[in-house]
Length: 253
Image (tube, rainbow, N blue to C red; front, side, top):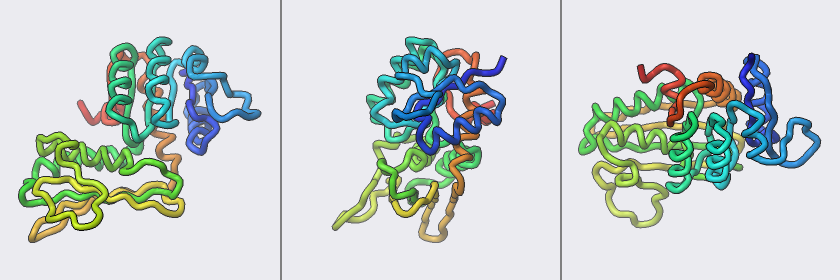
């Protein structure tokens, strides 16, 4: 029997791509929630969607993270979460849900980005913070509401993990005015917004004698939808726990 997949945010651009990818994967679309309209797949709320689906894919808004976490945990429904901009309190709610149901929570569902994240951690470990300044530059479409992007923060966390530090302790974002000299060991972020850029991320390690850049560019949102459906199919029947795309891709073996 095919996996029943629900989509939170089914009426948005990503939601429509997800519905197409669910069908392409041979899974069953269990319904979705989103803006009211004539879509026959729309269900009244997240609780109804959780009851109808075995796995819910969620690319909505950070404000929905906590109520969605409660509803999916109560229903025993697996959760693929790709929403960015979550607060510390939101992430606590995600972790609480993962103690009851399996959850894949990832800043990005592109296989290429997840390989970049793995490389970022290795580079962070290999390039000493006192000699190599780490900077992350990202650009997205003008409608994106959070900055830095979830993927950029994921890059920063990977570098920080490689260096054995916590990202909040070394993060520098939004420099403006007379900021003084750059702090040794800081991980810097710059966010650009404009046009309809799907997503561009560059990690730079800069020393006095060399610069190393690692760049990923996405040209079609479908790569994220394909990856999220792959995660949903992988997640079915997994034990409760908090997983990432590295687990889905078999990179943690």
